[in-house]
Length: 615
Image (cartoon, rainbow, N blue to C red; front, side, top):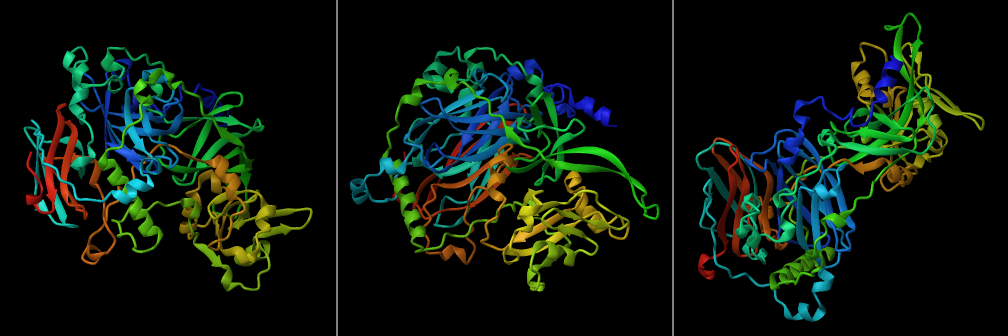
């Protein structure tokens, strides 16, 4: 058994990439016949804001969404060709969506978003776009603040008709904090993948590019007059994409550098607490390993690196199972993530050197954000409650069935004493020469010490665990395999941790405000973001009680939904308006089932329509 596993691990990383799913296969011809378009929630951003995006990955010839899974890399580049932000993104059946935060220290300037494949030459990027970022401290002077007033907009309405959709609002105009409903109807076909944003029309400070622009033939003079150089991707410049590792495009691979020795009889692995799975670390060459996270969910992950050797143990013949395979915990491995440099000189464009000029609208917008910040900082008002977000769970903080609070055992002086009290038959050594813990289960005792989770941080450092003051601990729990058919809940409880819990798990919860002694070193190594996972766009919940909140609502973007499915010829969106009267645009973009390129705009009015001129 061990020999077979060992041989499998020696295959090159590109051979072991996730190819088990047919939809991950991607031929060279398909890889070259692809295009990307991204819709953003805003045409510009302030430093410190969140950029929200909706991505379409389609064939360049027929404009159909590309079936299958891809892992790409999104990078934000500054004028010095330095990486400001870099994240992996997952593209599933031609669609992806997510968000990333702009650092608050960014200076006013142009920045470039580049989308490419992680293990390919960055020159083979498949999308790039320049966005303008403004630093509020740089564009708002004290003199400007005294003179500038936050005023209602005055703008004409505009509509862009589409051959493929109609956008219909349920009312001609809306009041403040009123619920609006928009119907999107397809023409001549039944299904489409869309993204929708509703924002102030004045936000667009320059000629807007729409999804149709990328479909035009670059040999056509009209295209050269319409698109700037930076808006053309490689393929649209008739420049073939020279892929070298197409087979890896469907896999999420991360490289690890081993920092300490590995026992020859051991197998390294990573346990991912949030997904409750164990992953084998594949050795590419001595000291260099690859972790394949293809099947993992995205966002922040907690990795616990360890190494095990397999052996068979024999227990008392009176137990329900006399033999079973177990894993010996041989200790925590020390790895570091490998981040390979990428040469963004190859995608640099002179447009990055230009400094964007802040329009009156940008200045108004920045001032409104500043006013809100001061209001909430001074606690003048509480922010309006938002719609409930999806709950994020950290399974490292799971509370076991067997869990006792220290408040119920006030006479316990130390962690070892408390452990002996709450777990019958547990063996604890706490002497200057030996510090150890062994958990008993029905019919036997684990050979190695359990792994401790201190507020979700894994550790094998018993001495440091034993030194935690009892006054800092809220409670302690135990997970183990009781080897008893009548105790299935406990068996399933520890089983979810796989090899991670093969010797049992002891959970320690610290009291609120207590510093975790293991957190700092753990953060340095064991946390990364596998790929961006779509979050919930912040939207207020103006129910009957919240609608009368005195807190001002200056939202310029009323609604953002990057993954809208139009089925049976129709889709509908609902949202609440803000306090800012004026003209807003409902912007719908997407791809139909037969490659229809969808772009439509419909104006709606917040306030009295008579206040706004008609253009």
